[in-house]
Image 1 (cartoon, rainbow, N blue to C red):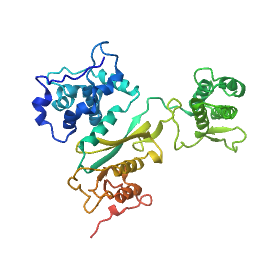
Image 2 (tube, rainbow, N blue to C red):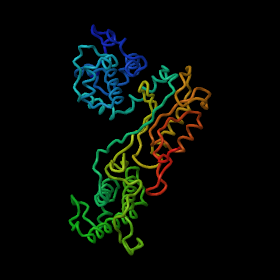
Image 3 (tube, rainbow, N blue to C red):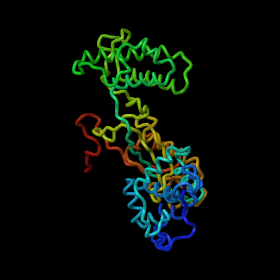
Image 4 (cartoon, one colour):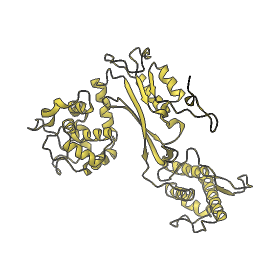
Length: 409
């Protein structure tokens, strides 16, 4: 059942004894002051059994604060549990006493899973945003830092053959009458058999023949089922099959694609689906050498307090999901908000600027990934200042020079 924080402070309450040591304006001070109104117990009652059933849980006001700090500091579960037990700042922010025994790191897994499976999986973020607006804690803070990170997908990346077979099997599960159609029109592989087809995988001709058979099966199955009255799940499964049947293949040498001869394409599709189990996961790179599969999480934050002012998870690739494109969305969202409090000190690089709303400008900080002309223009158009690392100059020809290679005499 649900547990609650006691109304009376304990004798060794960390905030009472050491609260004066917590820096003003920090995330720790903010949570210590507003934790109760941000994460009221009644907002988490749906996660627990009725009162009187089982042992009381760790209070939601404390665990939600721990989860918030864990994200802020990018700690593992074990590191967050240790910080909550030994770091006075964490104790004050979460309402713990100095002699509190803490909790097992697995408690964080338990809470995340319960919140994720609930009807309001974003309740912690929503609560932080609401209280930030109500308290005006960001009033006068005119800096925003933008960044992103890759979130690895939890599924294995699939090759073309595995994707085609998996997509056909998914259609068989999701689309009414598809099993009969597969038996009638799909002859390239026994889709009820586990594992990959038994061919000589070192023989290019055998692989091309298998790819041709699977693509032709997929095309015939889509043609046979697309005219039916399909619900959303069935239509999604059929659309996924059509997508994977075309994204990785091209007509075989000497073919125009109409004779049913195909081969795996000598290129990677720009927005390639990497797994039929997780169709939204994408290829991406943090560097030319480091390729990752998954998603991208974008954030905008006030660098002084660490409070995240906006966030957006996206696919890992695609122009609309790039760092500058999402940063423009954050910029537009800030422009739509009114700053009711007095402006703070003018940020570096903002001299002479005035925001479109008439107040002091914001300074937007980012690395060179955000240094596109479109984003810089949008920031300037909003009356704000861009404090963005310039991209390295590229020589116009191989082995050529840039202006940075020249010295003035």
